[in-house]
Image (tube, rainbow, N blue to C red):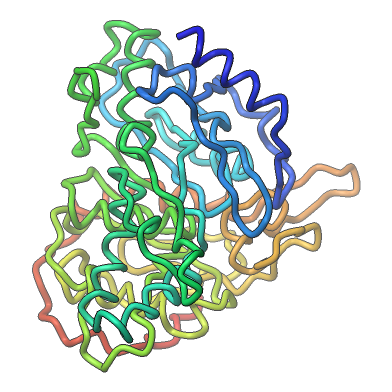
Amino acid sequence: MMFKVAAAFLLSSILVDADNTPNLCSDNIPNLQRIKPSDTSLNIDVIPDLSVGGATYSGDADHFVMIPDPEAMVEKVLIYLPGTTDRPELSSCLLKSVAASTPFPTIGLSYSYLTSGDSFRNGKCQLLVAAEGLEEQINCLTEQHNDAIDGGTYGSTHFKEDGVTKFWESVDPANSITARIGKLLQYLDEKNPGTGWGGLYMAGEDPEPNWSKLIIMGHSQGAGHAAYLGQTKELMGAVMISGPQDECVECPEGTEFWIDHDYMTLNSYTAFASGDEPYYTNGVMGDNWNRMKEAGASAWGEPTDVGFAVEAVDACASPLVSFVEYAPTSTCGGKEHCSTSLDDSVPFIKKTTGEKQYLYDLTVWPTIACPDACAKSSKGGKTGKKGGKKGSKAPKRS
């Protein structure tokens, strides 16, 4: 234990943290607890930092935990997975909104995301076709999620054309999404005994989350993991913000990959994206939503335009799309992509006093945060696979 503490202190003293966007709403979140992964007894001596594009990001960034009533019994929890290079506090306005609109706890999970963005990973998987064939490209699209969720070495044992550059860094199973969720739930159970946290995981040296009591929300890379977890686990629900962005690049029409397979979580999905972000305009995101529907995951219709995001919307009936311009304060590289969840990119209206109202806080974020309600209003059932033809119809305008 002394070695762990000393190592953590040494790493924190030399870390150069890189930020995409400032943290704007954390100070105004009631009951916010900031908990470092290293404080949850992860079974790993040193938590590695994450390097993406020459910048270094802390591997021990804070989890965000918001418990609306510390004395109430906990029966379910929403867990948010940020995208590549991001951490919970950079989506603090989204988390504040979700926590305020739901009676159950909200967690922003700090995790070891894959050290390559979605579009780059899609391209790297395509590189495998020349030497190993189409099947390995398809397998690569699956294994990326297994690396992040359960831990693995697929990305670190496959290389670009130079034979040196890894697809992405390995993830220790003890530092995976599953491990971090399990250890955090165990930590919260110990800190809040007798309030139901123990029912959210299976105790042991490596506590396993009780997935059926979890809603997984994710942005970008996190949205892909949320969808994959919905396929491979029986979740309470999944929320996909600006994703999934998985693409079988230049594959023959009709080629299936993981997103086309049977799902364990049925009719408990919501989705939201900017209608101007690249992976929506190129048809990939809409195609993935359609593929999920055809695989029986959901029964939703074509995407619905939320207009100015001030009126009530039905996130169970269809994915939601916004054509509201990103905030002028955005410092994000992909501004449209970031505008759905990252603090300084989310569109807002502002009084002359300086007070801001983030538009998606009004109806969009609170609505998509309850995908479990969709199962009650949907008949479900498969619609039949059609081979995943790319593209989707234009969203219904509000």
